[in-house]
Length: 144
Image (cartoon, rainbow, N blue to C red; front, side, top):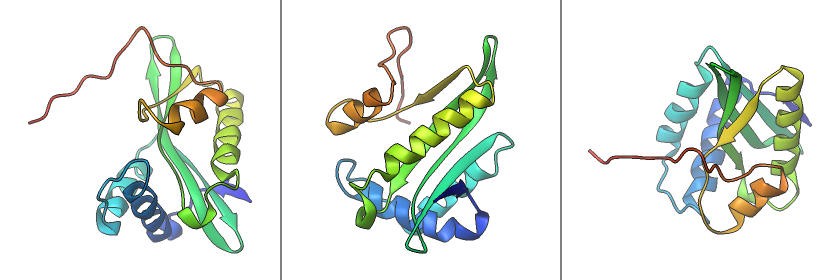
């Protein structure tokens, strides 16, 4: 069952995030405490939007992001899409992203963006859902 995110499940989201992103393909070293702060900062945005997937009475995964206004209209950025490893491979991420895309279209959002790994299975996953690699813009960063 897909429903709107709920602050009362913040600790569950943090556990899912830390567990999922600490494993393949990311192998990031997330603590549950840092994941909780990361997620709560996004949830506190005025333009935040999120979904949770409940299966067998547990939060199995979630999608979280925020919209932003540009000169051509409002876009939505998916900041996080995570499924607990116990539930991966069951189509939950697909259901969450499809639900989100339908909702953004209904809301009149002009586009949906996300950042993901440049290699491995994730680009193929997102391309399957209609996302394309940007050619007009690039992500740039600077370590401090």
